[in-house]
Image (tube, rainbow, N blue to C red; front, side, top):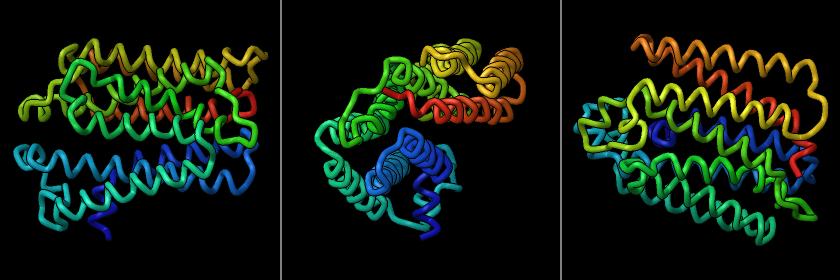
Length: 272
């Protein structure tokens, strides 16, 4: 079970699940809808994380990633694959309980993660699954309501821009390992400096959409968060461009993304 959990990429899985849970609660969904939606997203993200370790097993071996349970032999790739597929099916069934529109939006999110792992990560379109997947998250929440409504354009834009930042932040620390095993996505083609710029643009753009998109005067807390994101994004660009402390700066961008997600949750009542 420990090996299986480690193969599921528990950090990102937990983060995305908690964000959706908070959005659903903030938007005012009924309790049973929140429970089903949260379970569907958890199964979704576990399946995507497990599929990543399954499909990347050979590349991970070539890179010497002995921290990966499949590579170290703690769990078989076949078992990981079977559980990943089972969880994907489970997430689809759960989403159908929330209605066809919510299920459709959820299918976009699920397909985005799987298509990335199946090969889009190694193309110039590697950012597209992140844009589509994260952009669909607010819509999954609003379409899961008793009276389904499409999420507001600012919310979809915020999710998509946050996806851009998430993609480049996730790939940046592993550019060399990826290139050595034949993975060359958009961040690899752009290089470190332009990738750092993409992270900053994504984070700042997402925060602008969240703070100013709803059309109401932003709170003092929202403005403080906005300033913090701009500061973190600026520092990250400067230091990454100098080629220093990439993994530390990866954590900084994660912090900025967390602030943006928190601001999005604060705006949850206005998602549609």
